[in-house]
Image 1 (cartoon, rainbow, N blue to C red):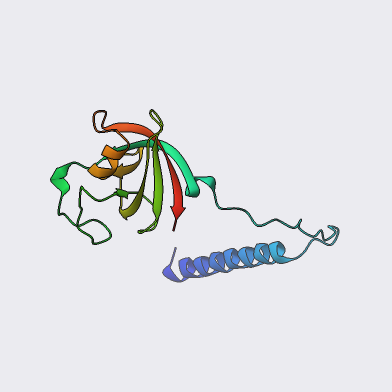
Image 2 (tube, helix red, strand yellow):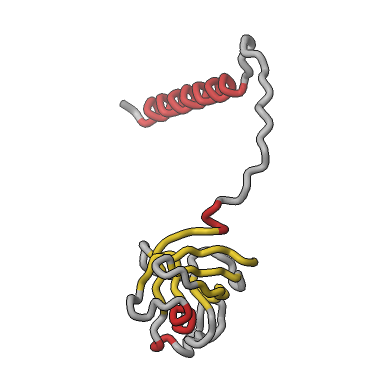
Length: 149
C-alpha cells in the first residue's frame, strides 16, 4: 500500500469521524419536539451548611515546642493566647469550643491551619486547652460553634 493511499484513507476516516461528531452534537442541541416545556420548581435559598456554624469532633492542643513559630496567618504562636487551628474557617473567626466530657467552654480566635490528623477538627492553644480542662487527656470530643466571622 502506498503512502498516498494511506493518506487518503486517513483523510476519509478523519472526515467520517468529524461528520459523525458534528451530527451527534447537533442532535444533542436540538430540542425534542414532543416534550413539553416544564418550568423548574422554584428553589428556596439554601442555608449555609450546619458544619460551617457548628460541628463536633476531636480536638487536641499545641505543645509549647511551637511557641514563637509562625502560624499560617503569619502571627507567631503564643501558647498563652486563646487561639486555635482550623482546616477551613477564615482567620479571625471567633469559635466557642466546648469540651463535651465536662461542658467547659472557651471562645478562641482562628489564626492557624490544621490539624493535620484526619480524625480531628481543631487544635487549641495551651491556654485554651487549660480553660476547658483537657490537658491531662490531650484529645477530647468537643463542639465547635462559630461566634463571629
